[in-house]
Length: 420
Image 1: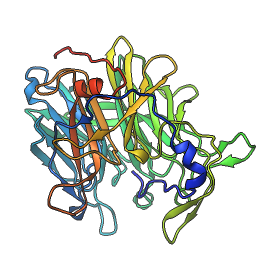
Image 2: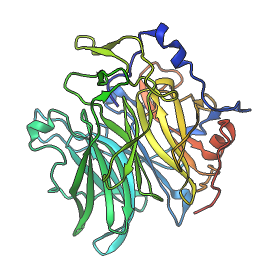
Image 3: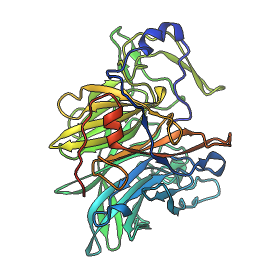
Image 4: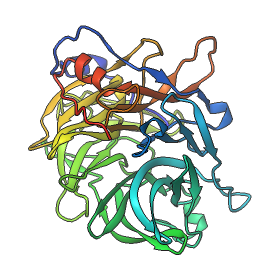
């Protein structure tokens, strides 16, 4: 996630656009989290970012939530939010270099490694410009990354230090193998990697790359590029693949949501654009902020920048919902998975037994009923966690039962109540 959210200063001219109503009905009860994980503190270089839910097919109660915490590495939790394992980031290769920084994580199942079928957790390592690949065995992560796999985008350590490195990540599998989509920090580039077993370790090869647009032609004939740090292109972080159709959804944070074949062939298509799309702004390096002019109204009606964690709740046979975190208004936008991806409405996770969720980054959802989570489990990052009795800045993860989302969002969503 970038160092800031877009700050809308032209409030008068934006009021009508920002007040666009969500397509949802009133619900009797709010959507609230059942529980949360322990707070992670910025003072400890721990910043919660992205979760992945691993289901133990033999013993569902032993399922895991594997999460990234950037320079604090990885944390693994049980279904009650208790920490089971902490994986340290890789050490910095040199005195002036950055250490490992795990940004996003996703899963691969039944990968053939050293003569057996294993499940893998795959994380993007922004500090090293590569992947961290872990075998899931006996409820723990074991690093099986090939140390000689190489960098993904960079040609040298000096280039890595410029931080245009691996960022967002999503996985998928088909008959030809296991694949990873990886986006690049501060660039509009996405790479397709194929995972390969090398003895007891896992490496990768780059198949192809996709460059999403960084500049856009507006209806008034002008060219527009989102306001950001000088020299940065609008990057992608949140990504997910619809396994039923092989469609990848890519969240370009300051632009909108794209879809394209997961093999990155063909032309990408915009599913929706942010309300702030086309908003003119000037970057001030002294304040690290943008000053904005009036919004010309070229954007969409429903999602605010930053557009972050994307995840899919499947109801079967290519049907279900695409969820996208709309950080600018602390909501989750819901789109129909089939057809033209119609917008169905938005919901927020409000205060209940635990605090509400703000500025949410990564998210993951499964459609299998798990102990304590009827209809499935939704896990989201809370970017502004407020533990009782402290004013320290912290982040963590919230666990929500999908049945509560379906019933209380006011969106008339379905649940897949099957068990694994």
